[in-house]
Length: 210
Image 1: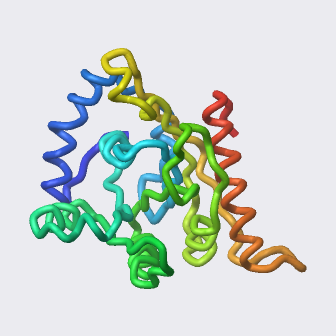
Image 2: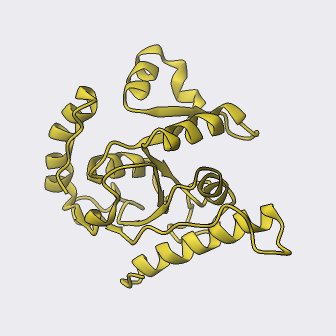
């Protein structure tokens, strides 16, 4: 799938400069990106073990990603302007940020891919963590499919430079029903979706594609 961002010259410029650099310095390999739906809203669900995971995903993904970023980054006016041009949504961590949730839903319903980390936080060990309810809630509310993606090699990336290599694997997107099975609470349904998403990411980690 060709990587073009005609509606965002800033995103296109950063991709044009950044993608050759990460390939040259980190030997980035991307596989299965053709599985990403070419149009429409989709939740790009990725494991998270390094602060620069969003950078690698933004440069490797065939479509421009909307993504959540901690609100503290928006305190700098210049950085805030750049983040907004790149499609970032400010997120106040540690509380139920209804504004960020509403913006994420709007992004998906307007046909944009949304980068999301189902684990909710960065892994301190590099190992996959348990999926949380957020990915299930967004998928069920919007009807958008979930695109599982596994990223390897970013944990301790700089410590092992120049020998560390980064690999990004796209799995098959899958859809979930809007309502839980009979007898299951909505919260439990969202949690089950989060678990299923992480299981699919683990299959990609193990080299198996569902």
